[in-house]
Amino acid sequence: MSSTLPDLARLHALRPAQQPSYPDRGAVDATVERLRAARPLVFAAECDELTDKLAAVTRGEAFLLQGGDCAETFAGVTADNTRNKLRVLLQMAVVLTYAASVPVVKLGRLAGQYAKPRSSDDETRQVDGRPVTLPAYRGDAVNGYDFTPESRIPDPRRLLEVHRTSAATLSMIRAFVDGGYADLRKVHTWNTDFVADSVAGQRYEAMAHEIDRAMAFMEAIGADPDEFHRVDFHISHEALVLEYEHAMTRIDSRTRAPYDLSGHFVWIGERTRQLDGAHVELLSHVRNPIGVKLGPTTSADDAIALASRLNPDNTQGRLTFITRFGAGRIRDGLPQVVEKVTAAGLEVAWVCDPMHGNTFEASSGYKTRRFEDVIEEVQGFFDVHHELGTWPGGVHVELTGDDVTECVGGGEELLEADLGDRYESVCDPRLNRVQSLELAFLVAEMLRR
Ligand code: PEP
Ligand code: MN
Image (cartoon, rainbow, N blue to C red; front, side):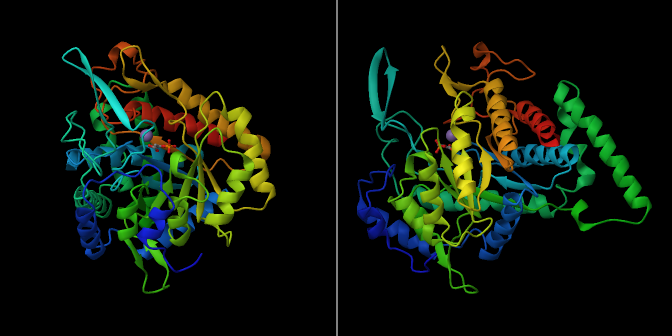
């Protein structure tokens, strides 16, 4: 890793994919200047801590739980919303830790997840019976969700709001985590509002009783470790808009190395992982732990080339491959990639994103996913790794702590006809709270094997 950071002009010369076409370059420059002077959101030493934890995942000694919205919105940054997401992640982590006896690394897909790559530059909707085409919504970081020409114009000043709302979310998370909300003695409290009416909630409650008994025993013998009272929680997002990620990159005074201090962990998406592209170039220079999404067209040679470029020193914990092949393709496509990367001696953590290869449009027009496909992809991921003797290191999930109706299936048997009841995502469909907890119980069973 070189410590000289390429400048923005050099990155733009690489013709980066998925960038906003800003109408006013002057406004872009002014925004970048303000961001360069803005407070870092995280500290470099915290990023290093996460690298160490991901090194344990790489060695097969820990499991990564990464989750949150597909796209955060400025309006969605409320204390309730953040607490609900944190709560469901904590509940899932407890299920995984207790049922599978594996340390769980907790990583929010939040406090920065505001920019979206799109498969089409335009969106067409029927307005008053006629088709109207406008630029696609690219996340609150870029333009507005409202379907009007004004709202869809990319505005660089939104990046300042990304910084502000991410800081607000992170400060709430830090307050919950340090202020006792994540205390293990609260395992019941996290569940109180939905025990009665869901099987997953009842199953969780039974497990929480067992944990209580174990803790009472520990207390009785005089043990009260710090780990009972607080958790480590880190944040992550896709590094997409180069202006933002570049401006938030700072030279760490301890190591003299550049770190992208907009989040602890950043990843490169499936659409921007070109080996000679700007995103790979930028992230090859920062010292954060990073991820790359690998879709079903990834060859083993692509993966090896990415690893050599992004992790030339082969540092454990630096690189995570987040595979998202789809339930129907993972068993055929993943083995050769894992096999060759492993044979090349490359240190990577393998994580399964069972969401992005399984999206389809319901007849009602809603973008959705089947819970059963999500589970099938995770099962395929585990089976492939078990067969190859490699470690299925974690899951990357789009979820929310609220009772939305965005993915079909699961124990509540949500139907396509139910999707309109509470479809709140501005981008991809998320697992709701019950589905998320069900997923955690199923993954815990896979881990126990
Ligand atoms: C995402 O994580 O929201 C996303 C767009 O994923 P991918 O890059 O894998 O398509
Ligand atoms: Mn998504």
